[in-house]
Image 1 (cartoon, rainbow, N blue to C red):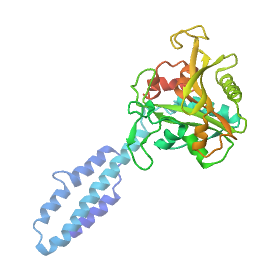
Image 2: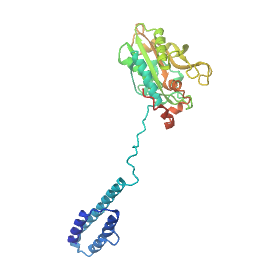
Image 3: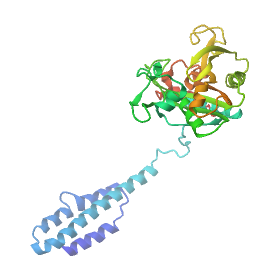
Image 4: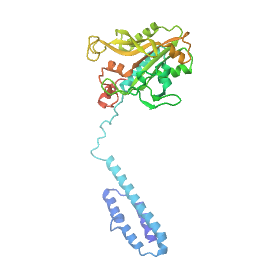
Length: 344
């Protein structure tokens, strides 16, 4: 039996079929139900117990070799047939790859950053999971402020050495970290994702993106703030865009204001997006409250500063006239394809 196996092994190794018919004949002869492999295993039953230990291993290796050889030859013939298929037209152009594009929020975020970089602002970033001090207390939020309530904030852990741990509700926490780690002057913007416990709708979402800015130095005034933001609006929305400031309240700025621009959709004539007022609010701003400066070990009698914050989704809505916030996070290819040509 050993001699027969050696003979068949040599025959299998030298076999090179030229067609599927030859390969099928090989399979039937060696691996078929009435083939050589079947006969060898039948003959193995009559071998003495001592020889079975040696021949059993040889016979199994022979079977595995024959099956592997058949599989290799089969795949090789299939490849050759595909490459010589008469239906294959080699003159046809290849299938190209469809170019991708940036997400509209990424496009607007980059454009906002570039505008402020030209004004000397650096980019600062911080963690999305924050403690109570950096997210609330250092920013002059009183204990009873509604933003601390569960209806507005996603709390992760209540209590502890650093107070409550939560998903940050604004990127103002990055301002606190920056002021604690350095000394004035500061001039930076803080882009990032923030979280609010709100019902998801066409005008609101439980997470969104912000860009906040901070400038602290000696003799910084509200006039500096207005001039910076006016320049920003003209760069982003074009010359001729009108701006107005309305008094408002934020715990971390005093005085505080909200800034409106003339609606870029209806050009100030009035539409559903601007609620027929001709104006759209795009950001909140104000002079940094002295308490915030003192909380960060900055002398409020020597230094002053301004801060502002805007939602990137709101800016993107105006720039591209998108009316539903949910489109930004649903990954609808039909929506995203509209921005493939935007490569700024």
